[in-house]
Image 1 (tube, helix red, strand yellow):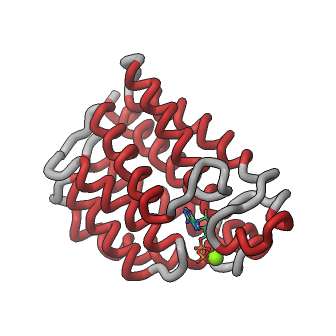
Image 2 (cartoon, protein in one colour; image 1 turned 90 degrees about the vertical axis):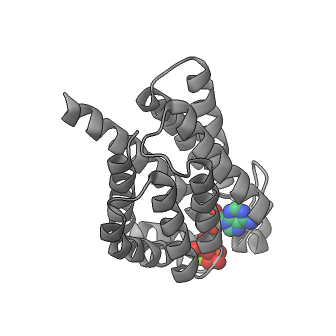
Length: 214
Ligand SMILES: Nc1ncnc2c1ncn2[C@@H]1O[C@H](COP(=O)(O)OP(=O)(O)O)[C@@H](O)[C@H]1O
Ligand SMILES: [Mg+2]
């Protein structure tokens, strides 16, 4: 995966967030405070403003700027959590213009570890960790099996989707939704949903470059 694809990833995710802004906010209305779509859209609009200045930067620095932008522009739990994901991810790939499947795995792993350290959520707490964690695991398995980045991302997305749907029947243990206790059951977690969309945007970006190279 190259530097252009990383920028494309951010563009695609920003577009997807804009299209799903109301949906994410509705999910948050059910078990939170109805601002997740608004928060994410605000943050990624700011990221879009910064992208033109990043064209010649290495992947680590691009992701670091994304992180700083999100931390300073998103209020709520998701700002620091997404900010930490990209910050820790950026340090794992600092100075690189191109990522091997192993590098991308390190990026995703570091991001996940950051989110867990920052938010203290475990698997099954009905948060973005329920998507990130199985996705990173599936990606790692694929890398161990010497799959390409695209194939590894396909596996990650399948696991991410399952993780996202898996947040529906469970009780929230972290974040605002946890205040609802059992009443949080039966609703899909908004942060898990946006995280799934983030990974899907990554897969789309990886695929596009493969096609345009042919
Ligand atoms: N401690 C945590 N660890 C991981 N993710 C969390 C945590 N707390 C909240 N989240 C995620 O943040 C999402 C809510 O984001 P958002 O609505 O933007 O922030 P807020 O809850 O402050 O309104 C949740 O759906 C959940 O996925
Ligand atoms: Mg909210």
